[in-house]
Image (cartoon, rainbow, N blue to C red; front, top):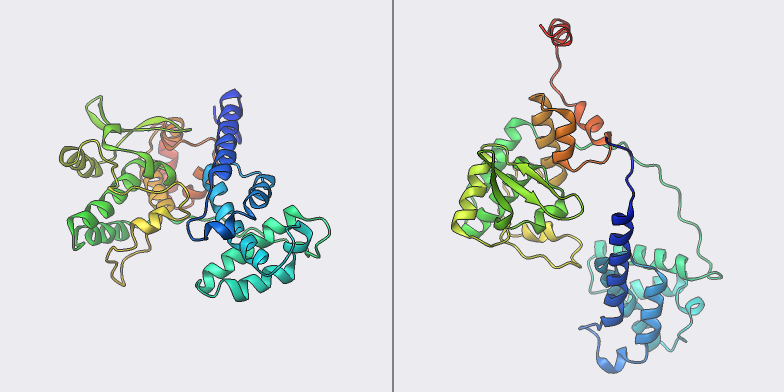
Length: 321
């Protein structure tokens, strides 16, 4: 039975293991872009600050250390003492963004400012940080692709200029539309995870939501071809770094996308997969298991896109006629 949340010893152990790996990542971190003589005086201070942010996984630990190391080294060069209340203040952060981040794009400067603001509010008690404004969560809607949009995406994938780009684009579409995997799962699966069960090609998804998903045709043909031509490889044909904030964006950054190509979003591919099976009246509990869901909320968001049904057809279905 599905519930709004899940808990258990395995979840606790998994989270504890991730936190331990994050702590180890902090201790091992050495910045490549900073000279050793600049890093040595601030390394211990920076690592302790990062640990006090309590990163919950290695990727977040790396991101925190990357931002903090640049900021603390810059502040130390300005002659500031290694004291949290002196360094992590609004004026110092803004000065760092204005002077020490000129090489970054404006969007990246905004990200770094937001990260440092969030870190500073966690790390200080007396620095004059104003509370963050309370934001109202926008209405949550992930719109599935229409059939025309799916066909256009498939056309764009087939028309890529190199075999590697055709592989990446086609594999991403096949996994998203054929299995409904979560983004992190897409990056993990290999051709060794493609299995034959009950006469169908299936994907054995590893990780916290481990399950075996039959691949929806015609996308099974694409995945079977990848398995045959490149056995033992990552299905996407792309190796991601665990600290990368946008690995799938980097995977697709060189693909050719014409102006009329629909915006490619993994969650929209997943919603399209779910809607397809809802339209075909797949058993709800079975579909939820295949989707790796722990609540019914996702169904409620997708169901608004179901094709309308007439009263006559609905009554016939309800009375089994």
